[in-house]
Length: 619
Image (cartoon, rainbow, N blue to C red; front, side, top):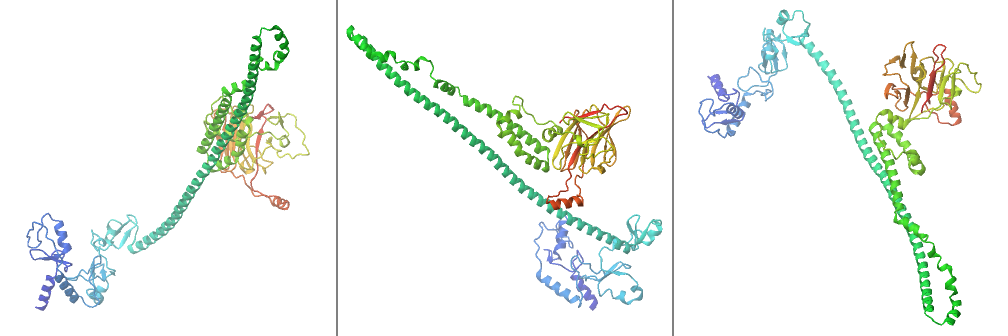
């Protein structure tokens, strides 16, 4: 009887919806008790508001309040039921599947019984010998997911072929030929892979974060530099405008001074003329008064006193030469001669500025930071040559023709980077002949003797260098090759291999483009890591060579078709100086640089006994 009454008492404290002890108990108007969450979810899932037990309907959903006295009674009841050391399962924890009434917190889960036990209910597994063999693990809630739905066995194996967990019966049925391993081993290996992947992802995240920080820092720095640069440009242009305004003030002051000088001269001359007019008027009055007398003796005696009037030619001189001298200056003033001069030279300056600004805009659109830095270095002499020297303006620009921006990259290179080159006869192969001021090169039938004063760098092949060398910046030159079928063009280092053959290679310190005659046509090729045969639209007559030292680029253009034939990129123009050279420079106190000087190289070759080959520098 005691146990029955105890069971009855426990059932009275169970919610009829969740079948657990009440949590925040509330009472409906019909007198039944439920967990507040249970009855609220029940009404939310139903279209009718009614009591789950007596089915009494309510017109409105009742306003439920927690029954505090009943809740305190439940807490007292639970504390009486829970023994020392036992804890009730909280929301989110695994409850015991055996407990009746309040669910205690599960202590272990049996993989054989597929049941979770609290500490008290786990006692048989620790006492009974057959139950001791069962496998116990930390409590888990998803026991159904650990059992094979087909064979109702534990999923203790992992199929590596199908990437699924299986039981021993599945191994015999559908996975006989598949690779399987214990699930615990698969767990350890998978966990190790995920840990390795996590470490890699963390390292990548750290690297990416550092890149983001660096990019943000670079962006901020670029923004700050851009703002400073814009401010500096405004200062430079403001100085230019201030200079123009200053020149305007000086010009206006000069013109005003000239006008004032002419006005002063005119005022002086007018005062002199007025004085002479007054004197003439007095003389005319005396003569008219003298002409009124009828006394002939008085007339004759008085003629001598009128001698000044009759014979003073200075009085009549200013009026006898037509227009006074200062009248020309006044007429020129009235014709606004200075205005015409200002308009003429203002138009010239405007065209110069328009051209230079157009060139600047084109360069900014087509160049990078290195180009801009190089152009900034050449801007000052350009301004000095074209703007400061007055005569240079008319020589440098044709004001009758409107300037237009370059139509392609090659034209921009031709305008900005063209250099005047000449062949150096002192370093030419004996079979080569340089003439017309170092502008033309041809084959010489008669070999020239060696000069003891100069070293011949090329003995195996007919090559010649230019007299000019470059160790920075950019330069461009053009060579006419229409009269030769076998030739070589490009640049070489100052320390080029003197015994190099044909064609030269970058290993020799040469970057070249060559042509060779095969008997029926001419082939064009560049020698990089290997010989590359080039396909050209038509036989080039003039080849342009452009070198960008800072970028390490050597490009060859067909000037007639304005197309790029080939471009070497990533060239290394620097090298470590020799120990002897470094020692000599150190002893002499000269700075030593690892930047090699580049020299343009040219070569032409005979075809059989035909020596009628010629190339010429056109720039």
